[in-house]
Length: 357
Image (spheres, one colour):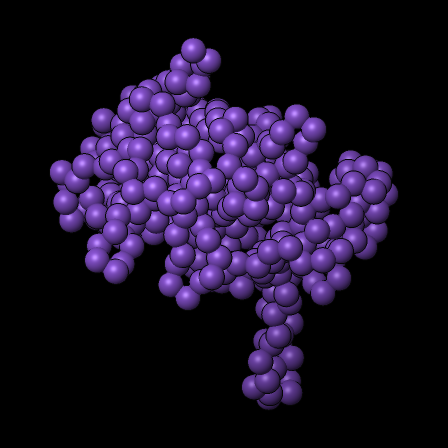
């Protein structure tokens, strides 16, 4: 690692791994000297976590840095010892991790060859001392986004309608690309959208593919009938069919994106329990509590959303969305997945709705 990258500081930490800001140490196939990169360390301590890491790796390799609004993967390495890193070649999966996910237990390739010697040694010395497994981790080197996530970027700036439109336009393009590749993200939310600040405005990047699912063929149109079953995602952005534990398709992503778009266009925010950090998101007010839209729709499939919102907070706020955008948001967040636009239809409608009069 030290020969290729240096870790500068920790910039994020989640349930499964840690993200660092890093620097490329010298020019090579892994990057240009001095470039800033994001480096995510994913400890491979359980088959469940390994399965998530492999999903993220496969999805990011499939995108192959070929869309400006998808986070780019530069390099990936498997840590096989305290200071031992093995670069993983493109198109060649880490077989030890694949085997671990399939067998339901962490597999150490060297432990296979050492099994016989260990058994013989134990018989000779009659010891019951446990054998220590080497550490394992997957390191992903990705492009660095200096604007933070969408929450940080949007809420630290005054509302700007053109900036809002750019976010909507870019994310609809990213969704068309992902669904065209057969990738269902399953955890779309502002925290999983990163921002690069440029002279021409923000460039948003869909990131964190740990819960994504790759299916055969595009998920748009007729192919979207392939049903998924695992309940996953984040409460305030999950589609009602996911909340309800029913099978679902790529159209669940469209619902999540609708929640995100509504929050961006009207600057809707909420505070989760135990948090003091505002987050972009739409919701239903139930007495003193905020209820995620998907959950509220499970309880009342006939729930009518009011877009734009009638009760608006004090300015500064962006102007309400146009009638075309309001109609699009309502369609994206329809209770019936078949009533929602597909990703390609979404992109077409976004382009029409954002055209200057």
